[in-house]
Image 1 (cartoon, rainbow, N blue to C red):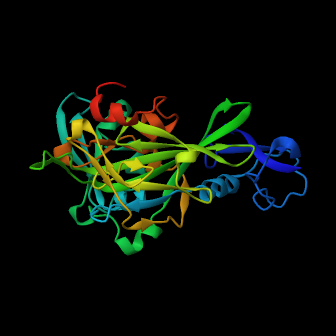
Image 2: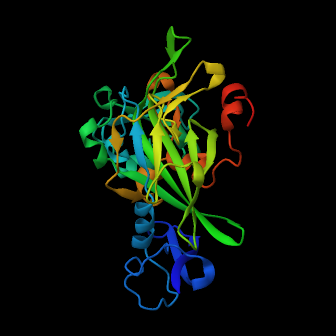
Image 3: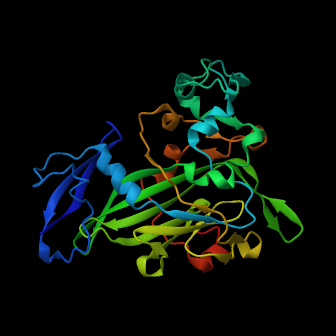
Length: 334
């Protein structure tokens, strides 16, 4: 018989995950167990004790995607800590006395953990979302092409509804960019550029067999993504190949032109620079960089991007697959 990961319960301790493993019978059609003996800490016979965060990290690392950028891409990813390091923290809104203020809470390079969590002293907790990170112009291009693999991808593991009697998990992978490039509209003007971009995809895994079942490729807004079954995915072993749209960084399962918004805001994907993340970091909800409740973005955009843990997709993906027709003609339909 072999072993597979069967269940977990979320917790705010450690990396926010506790996993339990159970035995899977040899007749279950297992091709490769989700957890190897090494992953289980070398247990000869599993005793049912909770697995530690190292196992979670091992799972996230095993299925981490490989990303390809368009050959003409100019804005690449950056680690979230480096984005914060190269930002100044601002508050814009009404203070506790009801007076509208624009206050620089911390200058670039001076944002500490306390500032991220508490923000400006002159504002209550319910108004912390009005903070924003203004990212320095010098880093808006992200890392150099040659350094792409050094940028981590961030992961969060979620339990999904069972399918055909099999337990499922989804591994949410989050990517962070200091800048979202513009779209060319009607071949004559551009629109949509703004500081800070957070994109994601979710890999759905059969917990008994370890097989990738499908992937949700998010494309800009939460509701714009599409579920793609395993037979349509491009895979390198267990790893999904994801193609990053030029400028806006939406994610797709194949290169080419993706028609959107009545052909006014198409996405272009290609096999340019390759990002093969050498490192995966589990999103730890206790860390200040993830507890930050404000927004990312420049003053003229009023902070257009919510922090990852403030995004609605963090706990659950949108239930509907957008598909080409809705993507092209029905942007107002959820």
